[in-house]
Amino acid sequence: MMTSDATAHIARCVGGDLWVVSWLPGRTLSGAQALAAMTIASTTARDGDGADAEWDRIESLSRELGLTGREAVYLVDIENHELRRPAPPHVRHRE
Image (cartoon, rainbow, N blue to C red; front, side):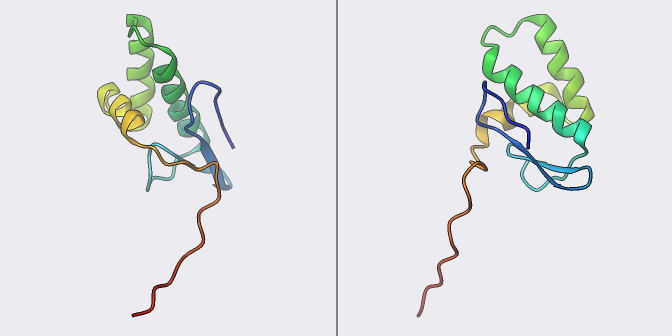
């Protein structure tokens, strides 16, 4: 598992070199892509002033994921999947 002190987002290995990242639901990434995704999430959480060097880094890392920097930052901001907790048990409703 990959975590960061700067963000609640995580990456979790699902077998071999396959990873899922909390801010990219539905996608399976390589280990290198998961590291890029976590770096984007951490950088976005820490960098409030948007320094040019950091923005260039976000753009570069985002390309590894097939995204633009703006798309990546947007997804980091809107996705709030808490993967650190176990999923709640499935509840069946009777009709």
